[in-house]
Image 1: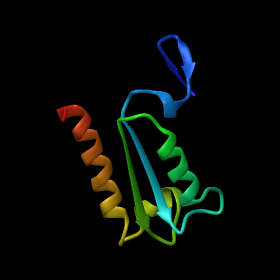
Image 2: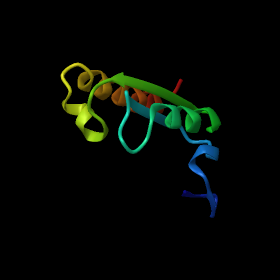
Image 3: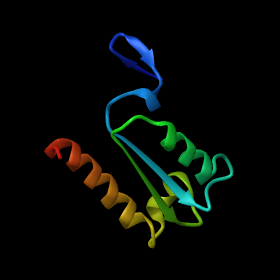
Image 4: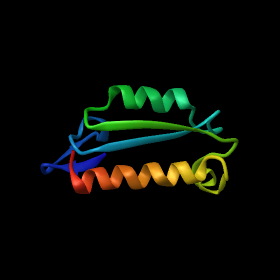
Length: 85
């Protein structure tokens, strides 16, 4: 939950940009499918990205096959917010 307009609003209902990231096959704690369901329920604007990696969480950054793309996608997402559509 986040504070939004002086009230608690679930993140998925908030109107700020949201980036959902997942590694496939996922982690032992949360599956790609669970993240996809959260994304599907979230209000726009939103973006969903998956990365093929045997790692999860911060470990994906260290994956030479997925890490560089993960970082580039985060930077692009932030630049999109800063620079607008």
